[in-house]
Image: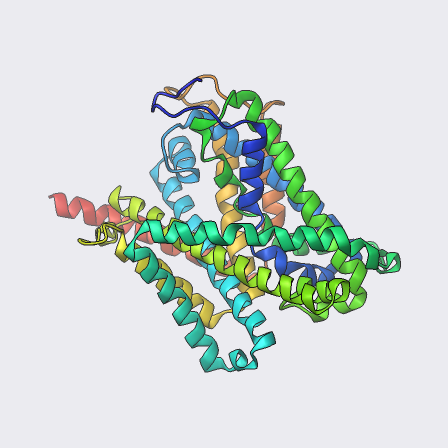
Length: 434
């Protein structure tokens, strides 16, 4: 068994890595998005899935090559920082965290909305805000107490997101009406782009599956094969979900934005099916937020400790629990605030846009890293020259071009604020040293 320089055993093969990618990508968004896709594109919404699948496949190849050249920790931040310098790395890390926090806020809103279907009291604005507060504060306290408690919760909730979906797809075909899958009209390129932008929310996160690069057997062959199998598996699963829900519900599907799959399951299985998908949806959403609250504050902690962000206090460790408690509290506090003032669709678009900017940076970093010196030699290299990174970057720009005017202005404003924070931080650190 081969080991890396760090002493890690290369034990993960094609199917193990493929499963890891699928497990991370299939999150909470797919439980809600079928109704939104049906509302904007009807039965032709399958095209948006294919478009997103193409993009995420290209992006994952870029992550694979960049990760084979930059072997230290940090993910997208490390790749872009190595290729283009600390400022670009700072922007990527900021957009990664922005996307994560907005994603948590979006999913927590969806969670409260599905609870309101059973318990109408959650429709009350005050109860809604209090529910969000207890959700984020409870997860923050759990993760401050210790990482063991946090990761234990993630393990419990992981399997719940696949079982009900697979059952619905397998049995739902008997109630599918093919007339409901007929296209009423040919979708325009603009409509596909607008729909793909919101749908991309369900495709985010696959890059995390490649984080175990030091434990992959024969990565030059395993990585591209696993990416193909993993992305194809997720794409097939998502397309089947959309086809079954659209084929069973027809024009009624857009009317059930809170829990479209649960409503579909009610027609397929009866009340038992509704309960199964409803509970599965809720557990999956809760599991996604708990996992994010476990992992992402550690990114804030690392960035603060390394001086990437000018807030050294965020690297503080709790004297008793030995966890980055301030980073956890800040992360959960921001998630709660955004959830309280936003709604799912709006928050999901901002989350997807932020992550697309991260992926744009990683796509371009492949070009920069190929020209770099003193990097890891060998490793995985995408074929066809610069075609894949340039095509990936181009599709991302097309996605982002579908943002509304206010959304584009907000994104530019955020970049301006982050730029000011970065350079003011440099000035402050120089002043402290002088």
